[in-house]
Image 1 (tube, helix red, strand yellow):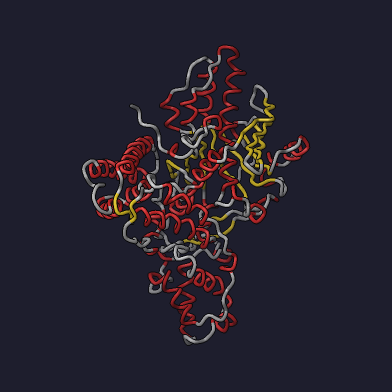
Image 2 (cartoon, rainbow, N blue to C red; image 1 turned 120 degrees about the horizontal axis):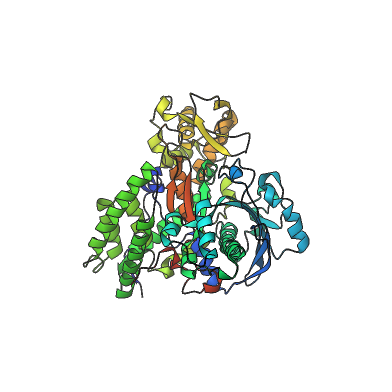
Length: 561
């Protein structure tokens, strides 16, 4: 039994919502991949492969169906023979090694034929409301060739090469929520299994990983014939699905303040609940210590070539040593052990280490944490409506709640407004450019909420506290988005980034990691300050091994011995 103790307040948004901290978040029990695998195991989902029409060159089509208690969902996959010169992870690519759609139900042959004319084209094609997501992936060429060749020759691939890459294919986009004709979020939002955020996309990636395992085995069998080996299930489990994510995702957490607030608030509430535990049982301490050891293995396998992440990894490895030594004695015994551990981490560890501790302390407490997953979707459309009757004084107070730090900043100083966000004409994707070097100001997107809040706050000085804000907006409609965001603060205290998103020193990779950590991504590997590679589902059980006992802690590698 969990011993409940004193109430611990959630951490202050002014501390949590700094980009450096958001860029240090790790997966946790509330990560979307783990929510999905727990559900599928608990509900006994069944999986089948009704179609696998792939030739010896790895070209063809396949269908994988996941049957839940009420509905089925099917990944329709198309495998292609992609010339090396056309392989690119950039969003402007026009050809891929594999393309996918997640179909709502079980597709007919006519559905698959229809999708074959559109899914391989991605943005240039169109899907229908019967599809929930559209995605594509490229092979990790060297590891793919190594695995095919090894299996074809009757031997297993080199574990070191497996761990150095971590995936056989990486997705370059998983589109959902109405893009290119796919079903809008509202179509599926009331389904229990898809109520938590991004569950359709996470299911698509889970089934993609199954397809990739089958495809590499199929190509090895075609090459090696009777002498080909079966891929060792233990090696297969270590392989995830890679992902290349760039600037297109970064504005998401700015554009969805209520939704992102719900993610952060759920995690912060979970942390506060565990910190409030009066004591920890021997079983709870044992669970934490076992997961800590497994997490240390994951950190050791984490590789990056980017100077920022190399430095953060060095700090994190030192943190793991300090953390293991700290909890090796009696640190987790006595009153309020988790609160004391968090307070110690704030003094002794880097932000990477602090946020890892915050995630790890949740693991022994599924009963306190897992139910919060139902609070993470955005079910509050009314928050978007501006309350024109709100007095100006209250609006001013709301702006100060989130942006007090920004109101005295010199927004004319070049270093404070060096960047500008815009949408590229070629791909209709968000981009970030240099304000004083490129002709982009006329196309700037409202992705600088701190600057805009300071501007609106200054303009409000001409109005008395008692005036309705509608009078202000009649004369200053350019501030509508800021007033809307300020009013959202009443229900979304974690909805605003407490940093300058257009400064000369802003790192969009921090914004990317904040979102991807909630997906459940691991082993973040920035390739510049604007794009990052990650791994998804590495260690996860495949359908034949998915049980309540295997469905959750797979994200942490097993410890030998």
